[in-house]
Length: 290
Image 1 (cartoon, rainbow, N blue to C red):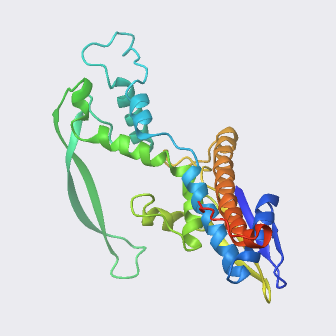
Image 2 (image 1 turned 180 degrees about the vertical axis):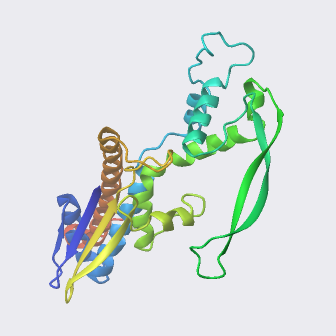
């Protein structure tokens, strides 16, 4: 789990697990016309926000190109014929649907078109209330066989939906930083991260968030963390990912955090220079903040 901390003592001293953040905050609060607590909270929120912005994700066009060019394999030892453009993607979608307990797409099997429900009451001696229990039976109703191939298999909209799902999933490693920024009062705009997703993962060890702990009167600790990337949400039961996958996820998140830190440090020092320049140079320098 990637963590950024900053502690403020009642005397106004600041301590962080990133020395560059500590130094920048110490200089920033001296020229900022607000309480140290508010200044640190503001900057921790900005760092989390910019970390989410800078955590790498695959662009939608790259995902589309890669999914549309998956390798085509033989079918039971026989070469495939017809439109084979989406064969690899078709197999990937059906692998995901199988793990989710859903019916596979296409094929030549009879598809379930409905469900017949019957109920029967019988006497159960184990029940104390009247002794009667109702049992429901479900019988699938299958329609005619259908044999579709190539691109026609995706006419039910599953292809485009799968691409949208993968595009959203590519941003998942950012979600912890986004949860942290929102918790500190700097949420993303509509369309970046859904409110339901943030709510589901906010504060969780496998999601992300931020806490403010009162250590003593006038002393507080800010903690920002990102724990996304531990579980494989593509598979039924959401098993843990391999240690190598988790390590790669942490490296991507760490790189995003460092970029967010550097961007916010630049902003803080620009304000420090702007407000201190008169004392240093006899005139005020106008430095545009990031």
